[in-house]
Image (cartoon, rainbow, N blue to C red; front, top):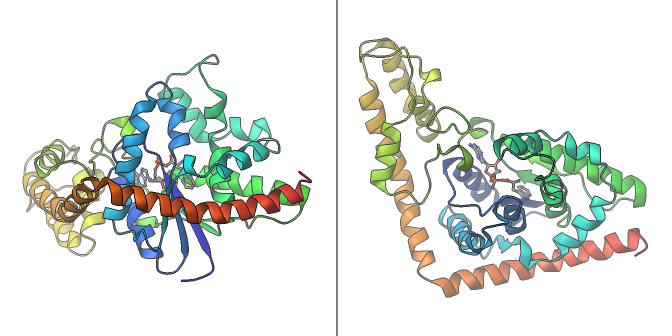
Length: 327
Ligand code: TYM
């Protein structure tokens, strides 16, 4: 295992979906090369679930099960819940003192969330605005060198680098500037309606969906609007089913796309085949997550061990930070 460190995280705001799974599969590949810290960011989930907090704990355990089911080895990777490592909160507070308000107001995800949740001046919380500062703390408290994420997280990582630079200029070199790692082929997984797959758009296929649900969802997915009959030439670039096929069948998709373009295959066949491909991918994952969730003691132990390893590194960083800031 190398000396370079990676930190990444996911919010326990509900079940994980195929977009999240692509990032998880990247993590699983990286675990052999890096020291990895994989966080379940329950404090971030409070920015939207502050009035339904009872949902966060069970969702966090499901996310932990998904991390492991997707291939992370809990003995190699530190898997932990953010709120179990209080150092994140201390660093968040300190970083908030050196982060200009203007930087936060300009973050595109803040503007998006504000619109999606239809929030006005009165209902935007201090925590929602500060969301990316907490994310910067998650990353910097492990002095991470790299952060594997989907494309939507790039503005947060840019801000993390700016905060790290500002801190280092003010107090001396403590933090490496973390690089983003985005897998271009899977940077944005489309949802069933063609927008980015997201819990908040109600367009996702979840890792917890059973085989019939996957079949039903794929059947309702958005396809090329100009292909009405099987013999009409399709434009795979405009079809969600074809786009997902390319991700989950990176070799075989070429033939199906070609046949689609020539009008010798129809949407029904495309949908049936994609359903089979997705269910073959998800079947072992479903079995493993079921097994993990039916053994709560093991899951609790993995999370406790992960938090202990994370805490050891985070407290070392906080000693450096306090010293640099004369605290
Ligand atoms: P979250 O929980 O929304 O998403 C978790 C990860 O999944 C990726 N992702 C996608 N990738 C491709 N296609 C999609 N449709 C898709 N939807 C989601 C996200 O890019 C992300 O990598 N702010 C973060 C959580 C966070 C974090 C961190 C991440 C908190 N602290 C520190 C990295 C490092 C978030 O909301 O992710």
